[in-house]
Image: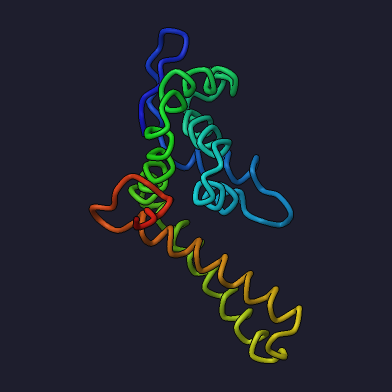
Length: 170
């Protein structure tokens, strides 16, 4: 993750327990862990999750943590100013999460959770009539989950290009 210049101060994002604690507390929604929400959003290339990752990565500043607006301004001057940098940021953040021992375990837990869901959905699919509306919905859901896992696995491969979106062959 890139350093941000905020109010004349170089702010180095740190992915640590303070980051994980804020993400869990602030991004949890609908019974989902905030970390899972963040990772899913990064895999979906939601720019709001870049903002969240950088904002919470400055949690170690504690009371002097820059405001979300200041983080957005700094991101607009750097990462959001260029499409390639924005696209690369999604993978870069996930790889940075993976580089931290604690957060790498959170990523492993994320993958295990998705695999459990896929197993449950497959059992449900096996009990449904092929071609029914419910079967088709469940199959689509499984494909979407598998796509997320495939993106994550691709990003975490050594030497992976810094793009989350798979390239479409010409």
